[in-house]
Amino acid sequence: MKGPDVTVVTPADKVKRLGTKLVGAPSLVVEIVSPNRPHLDLVEKRALYTDRGIREIWFLDSRTREGLFLCRVGAKYKEIRMAQGVFESRAIKGLKVDVAALFEMDRKRLRKAAGL
Image 1 (tube, rainbow, N blue to C red):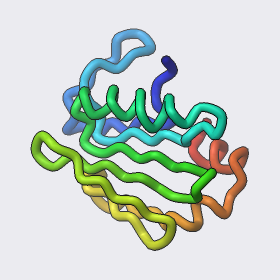
Image 2 (cartoon, rainbow, N blue to C red; image 1 turned 180 degrees about the vertical axis):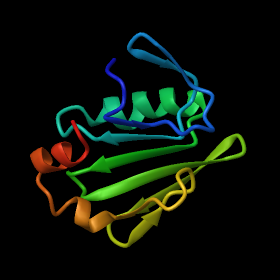
Image 3 (tube, helix red, strand yellow; image 1 turned 180 degrees about the horizontal axis):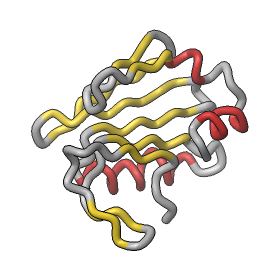
């Protein structure tokens, strides 16, 4: 299974690089949900990331034009769904995203903006 589309590691994270793999839990991962295989991203990868204890997980779904944001609170995750408005990261201080603006870009531009 391919890793997340975007991984954010901060200096405070206890993450080590072993070749092309990261060992430990980064602060944030972002998945651009595949319209052809949403189950992989929204179910399988969600389980993988929450089991790893990643602080914040974003799923950006162009089919529904909605962001699903999972924020770890203790041992559980708070789930926030947004189609508009500004989401403010709890994991990365100062990171804010206008959810509707993300979906104004087409998929190709969204991947390019994310550096993919």
